Image (cartoon, rainbow, N blue to C red; front, side, top):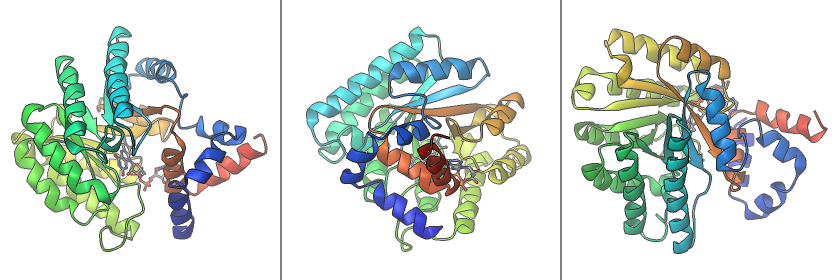
Length: 310
Ligand code: FDA
């Protein structure tokens, strides 16, 4: 299972594979399970259907490691337009952005100015703007940018990964800022020196971080928690911890990916817990999709079945 994960994550970085795989019909059919379509309209259509089931949405336009300044400007403009389109449609939608799609590899100041512009508009619409966490080459730069952004944009939220050994210490520096934190396990291939190799350690790290975010102190300082996971055991433990810590429902939410654990999404919404479904769209879906396959070996069988028309 570890080998398959490693192979899929290595494949996620292959340009050769990407250029070929995205043209294959059976791959596209398999991807549709996690993605309603490539366009913003497809994503908004799915958001509308989810809204009828009391589920709010986070949108992300797929893309990473953008190499031209003009492209980063196009991405920022697209996100501003997406916010207006969601507002016009009357949908409760927030955005999540990747900093390398907004130029972090090229110029951190430029990435900050793009994300600041998007966060400013989100604030006017009383929405949070979420920042994804990419692989560990970007952890320091992302934290640094977030701290600068957070001074002017209290509505900015940051993703932290429980598999990284450093995250508990990073969280302690973010709590006094009253940060909004989306906690995830982490989706990249990281060396054991940086990330816990064992799943049970990643899960326990997740729960310890969740507990800290739900603590009375973190809430008093203005922190907000978004638990990005499909792990039903962890979700149950977090629900119990929230009750024990007397965290009000407005202090946290769960976030799940489109098409994954839909029963759990419905159960949480029916129980009155805040839930957002993250919908990805865009044509640059290959690396993102490979990370979804790596998360669950059964997904590879699913693709194989699609290959034969199932
Ligand atoms: P885990 O992998 O243990 O899975 C628990 C159960 O959930 C599985 O047994 C299975 O039933 C189901 N499941 C999980 N993944 C599945 C899949 N792909 N297909 C089908 N079923 C699946 N990562 C990152 O590094 N940076 C980021 O910015 C983000 N952002 C982000 C936002 C949101 C809203 C979510 C939900 C996730 C992310 N992630 C992420 C991804 C995250 O790091 C992690 O890889 C996945 O969420 C899978 O981990 P789980 O917590 O679901 O647990």
